[in-house]
Image 1: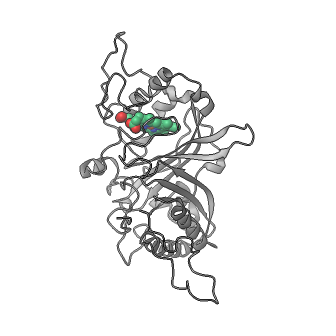
Image 2: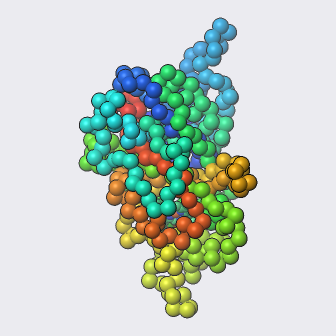
Image 3: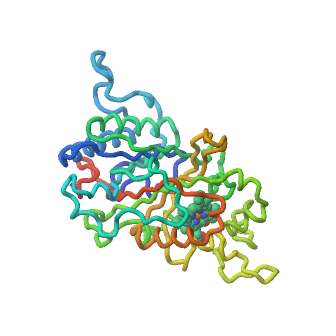
Length: 368
Ligand code: HEM
């Protein structure tokens, strides 16, 4: 169907198959009252439950004497698999709300990585909301209405839309291609494998904080592609950058997209089939450190300063433990990845995404 259930042990939008569009919003709190924060999450939970069901928010949508409780642009539209996933950033645990003692021990600001060119306007936030849907109007509507509900309590800090090819454009539902033309997501763990998701994605009560049990830690990186440089590099160079064939997505030297990476394989020249500095090889690490990637392509249109395209990958990953999973991986990539010739990280944020809730409860209830 076109509806993804909002309630459950885990929040939707994490191991949910990626919808076609993303609207990611980062908010800063303007209150210092924990009661206000609780009220915000209660109102957001109610609104999110309504929107993900395809209903308008609130019950004053027909009163001529009031501004309607929902802004209305999704009236009559299908929920389009809308999911809304909430988390809090490291700054949420500073002194404002008396929650410093509740900060998960494994969760803090990300370290600076080699090559980072972060711009503050794309970084951080007290609260992160990942909105995904198969329709961009539906996704945008959710962010807009959450921001509207937050008035007086929280303000938008930054927002980024993202896209993948849509279902109608690819009825075979193959792995989506990123803006470098390569299939992106092939090596991801299987979201249908509950045991793998438990090991890789879902925080247990020992993963930083008991209140995070059933939640997951999110890393977002706005990674700009140096498109003009990439577009001038040869196919051979491009394939050696990822260690995969562009056409099939298969590891270099193989035919099947899903053939396992063989780090010992040699090509006819006797060299490693997967170049030592290729992205897949380095990100694979020892084969035991894994993350769940849920990335979208983005464009901010044209960069007015240079006339070049502002476009790239809005990287999102979910993991049980950012320190054990994302950070060591990104340290290796930052140091040696051939892909670094063609990309630059310009935005960064981390959010502790709450466990799910039941009807009558609210997102965040295990923390505040
Ligand atoms: C694999 C693209 C950044 C982690 C891949 C693949 C592509 C790709 C095409 C091969 C297909 C696949 O397995 O999905 C990109 C692009 C990036 C980027 C274009 C930036 C613009 C990152 C970052 C991380 C990462 C920042 C994590 C720190 C991985 C992992 C794999 C992978 C874990 C799978 C490795 C394996 O097969 O075990 N990426 N990636 N990528 N990437 Fe990235």
